[in-house]
Structures are given as structure tokens and as C-alpha cells.
Image 1: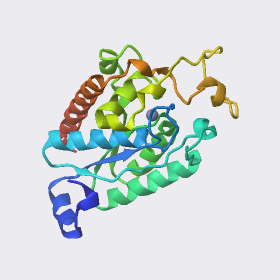
Image 2: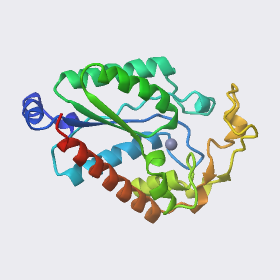
Image 3: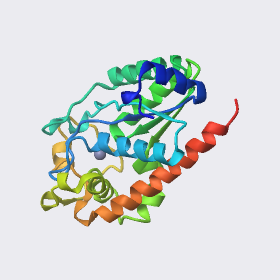
Image 4: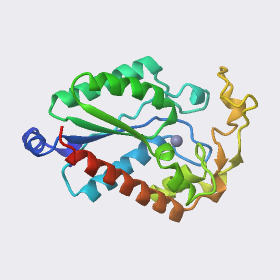
Length: 239
Ligand SMILES: [Zn+2]
């Protein structure tokens, strides 16, 4: 069930029968010239919907946290960047409040790489309040499955563009999809103010031209199935 459309009475009833919830977390961020700014919100929200369908109830889906930590790509138009410590504290506060309302297992579906560091800290803080927290970042945690569908991965690259095509192909402008593989001469990321303008060029990495709606459907399907499996396992684990 969706917390967004649930009444107080129905929520009270729901937490009597389940203690499991999904919290999608994203970022409003530049995603190439072809994808919407909301790509990192739309993907985890869609996954949460699919997982809830697969579980046939027994999970409460919370509305997403849309603004994330996006320091690197804040140099591009439309990106909203929340500082890492503010974002961590905010997500922790949301999660702690959810835990206090009776949710003991919180599945965070993350759509954005820049959030990962802060989400670890937030998960630890929520866990201190008695809940279990697990964070999934779909393109990383299911990379082997995705790489069996796509030739490569990237920011607004083949995999993410395919997923957005599957969500709503009318909102993706494939005529503006590019191929761009950023270089890391030192083998690690170098933090440099404004560096993303050169490194990502169009706020994109990977080959977005290879993306198709069909690949996106397959990615959503396999990732949702894996997530549903994990949540089923988690739900039956007695503590
Ligand atoms: Zn993204």
C-alpha cells in the first residue's frame, strides 16, 4: 500500500500486520541532454511499485525523498544539491520517524550514486533507534544482471536510459543521446570544483544510444524480482 494515499486509520491497521516499508530516495539532477532531471527519482519509485505488486501486499511504500546529494553535477542546469551532512541528517530523521510509527524493517531504494555515503550514515542512525535498514542502489547491487542485458552502464548511459524509456518513452529524447566515456587518469575520482563539466561533458557517461525500451523493461523486471525476493526473505526472518 502507498502511504501517500493511506488514511490514518488504514495506516494504523496496516502496521498491525506488517513492519516492512520501502522508502525510495533520489535526486533532481542533470542527466545528459536526453533524460529528465527526475531520472533518479522515477527509477526507484517505479521499482517500489513493481516490488509492492510482486509482494501482493505486506509492504508500505513511502513517498520518495526527491532531493539528494549531487555536488559534482551541481554545475549543470537543473541540478539541486543538498549538502551531504544535511541530507544524511534529513534522511535519518525521516527514517527514525518512520521507525517510531511501527516500521521495524526499512528498505531504502536509492536511485542516485551521490547519496550513497550519506545513506550509510543515515541507516546507522535509524538502526540506533531499533529498526533494521537495508539500502539498495539498483544499478550497483544488480550490476551482473544489468550487464547481461546491456553492453555497458553509465550515468544517463545505456542502462539508465533504457529504464527511463521503459517508464515513459515519450519523455526521453533519443535524438540527444550521446556516447561519452569519462577518463580517470589517476584511476580514482579527483574532486575538483567544476571538474564535472569536462569529465561528463553533457552530464552523461556511457553509450546512451544503445538504450532501448525493451532492455529497460528487462532491467526493471529482473531488479524488481530480485528486490522482492530479498524483501520476502527479510520479512520472514524472525528476530
Ligand atoms: Zn541517474
